[in-house]
Length: 291
Image 1 (tube, one colour):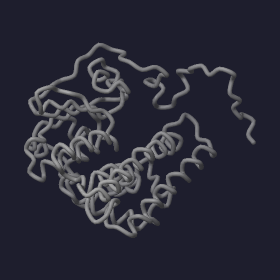
Image 2 (cartoon, one colour):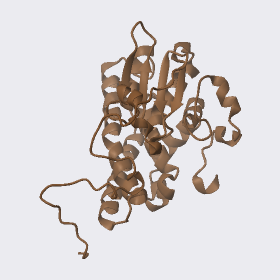
Image 3 (tube, one colour):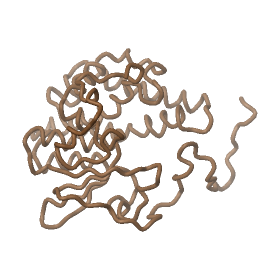
Image 4 (cartoon, helix red, strand yellow):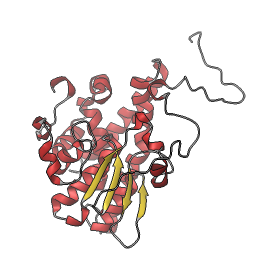
């Protein structure tokens, strides 16, 4: 046991210096920190997000709907710079009291309303447009089960493994081992399922695949400083097959670009024509060491 073992005090107190790369924005309180309204575009849906795994769920879903021909799914996507604290703007907090991206304003009906949490957005859009969510009760239950599996699993990969492996101010063996083990277990869960079915919920692509792809695909392709090597993710061959299949979907290619440095905002399909690095549209997604 190391000499610097932490002994918790009787009552925890907030240390603003002890947060690693997120020390400047993380606090134990909620609510707005700055009065600032959000911009509004012309389309029925206004998305406020960032090209993180959770944010990309929404943009891939919108692009899948548009790819299918649902013109009513046109959207404006506005970048929220989380390291600058824009998620704590009063306008954003009105849409998401939890101050996490993505946040969505649905203005498609007579009365605008908000949707927050990426899984809720996927369900809302799937039900609204009757797409990527089966009607059959058994298939629907399976889809929801895998969707909720992903929603519950993401914190272990991001706030757990990703944080302690990359973002924490110091590296410690125990938390890295703990969350590396859990991340590999989650990959094994998906790998076993995908050894039996083409997609997570069965033979058809659903919102469960969109949700899981943004996280599993990101790690499989080397997020968190090539964690695919550290975690040995190539051993999960069924996950790899599934990831590479979704990589090639036109909507996934476009959705991955929205609210990133390559495309900070998205207001129409024409915006994709303005992306300077055309290699980003390659249907074969490349890992960081070969970009």
